[in-house]
Length: 265
Image 1 (cartoon, one colour):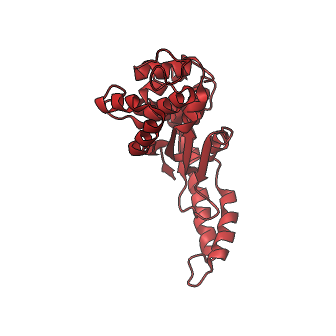
Image 2 (cartoon, rainbow, N blue to C red):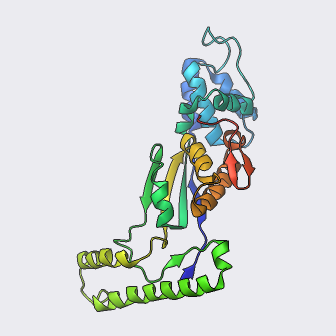
Image 3 (tube, helix red, strand yellow):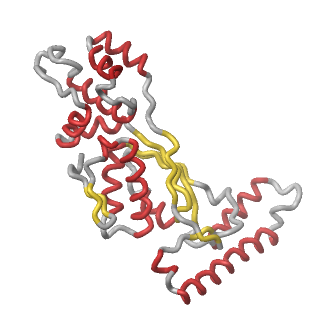
């Protein structure tokens, strides 16, 4: 039995093609927006997630500068203020263009069964235990469980027995013998996974847009959320707030719960 901790790796985020953006803006007369970006007025560090959200929002109203849309006589020029107004006015559709991809590592199937309930705005590729044969059983114990000596002794003994049974089955089925077809290995491995606990550590790539992320972070860090997923999404919240503070900076964290200033964006 291998004791593990749930981990979050940010593996992908938006990257804008500013040459194509400039080509579009020249066509609609919105070059001044890109000029402000070049000067660092929008974001000196070229925060592509935030710039993409602003770009999508301004396209909706042709609000690159006053006068392009005769109904628009003034525009916000501060990006933080602009994006806060997006959140405040619940114009959440523009946030769906901004997605982040994570590897969620050493998470249990208890957690992944709950995570798949958040389907809109996500993509999921999970490690397949039909193909991946277990040689050990990664397992996360919360702190209160680690402090219970008898519980840990009994749990460790049980998990080690499960590991040994996995190894025994692999030998019994001859899965490492020369010439065993992969089809046969897959068939037997699929059967063997039935004897793994639901708490076994696994991994997945999880992609979600900002609108979905905002809801999921709030829901899965709430006081009544399951403890493992609550721990994990606290980590997700820290990652995305660092990456796009204008899109996640309105959260207050109280006893582990991430509470947004603006809900249901």
